Amino acid sequence: MGAMHAFLDTDGVLLDVAIDDQEHTQEWLRAGHVLAAVTADSQPVQGCNSVSLGKLKYCAVASREFVRRYFPEGVTVAALATAPSLKFNPKDRLQAQWVRTTFKRTVDIPAHWLPSTQAFIDATVAGIAWGMNPQSLVAAHLREGSLVELVPGRLLSVPLYWQHTRLQMPMLARLTKAVVKASRAALR
Image 1 (cartoon, rainbow, N blue to C red):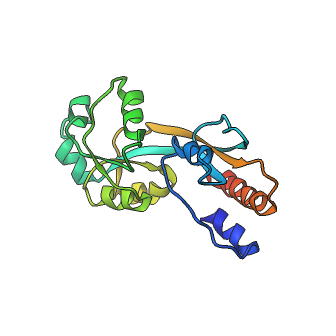
Image 2: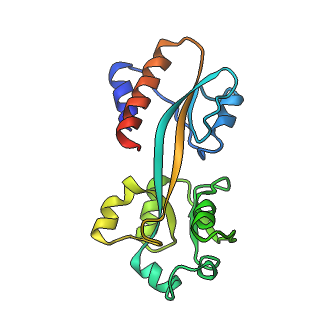
Image 3: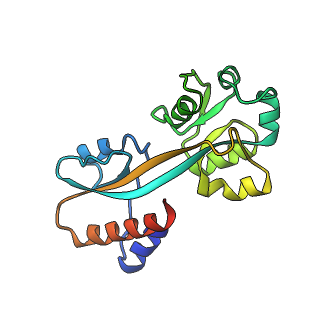
């Protein structure tokens, strides 16, 4: 939102923002549906430039009640196979990546699909499921205790890149500058 605000403060235009999993946004660029995208791939799409934005840290979190209910003996591979998780959409692999890096195993994880970052947080606080949330967005909930990390300190770091068409468009150059500046302030 910081990038949008900075850009719109100087350019009186309307934006059409499309949301997809960061591992699939390059498809939008390839198909010509967007002029720029945040992606997890550093390799630029043909005709595009790629700029590193930093790393977004995700943590696996749930409410205390959810942890008591589904992980009474601790967070184990067997418990994860029965505990509902949240996925943004069918393309979302963050939960599976976290389980694989944390437990060195592949687990078939039951999941609700919920295509909203804010709804992910609301659903985890409500005890509906566990989810992978950006650490920065759940920090206050972790401090106050409405959420806990499933495995404390076990974060998943996702490098993000801004890819944009090489077409010389002053407005796109200003948007790129706003996105890079906001990302440098928010990401590691």
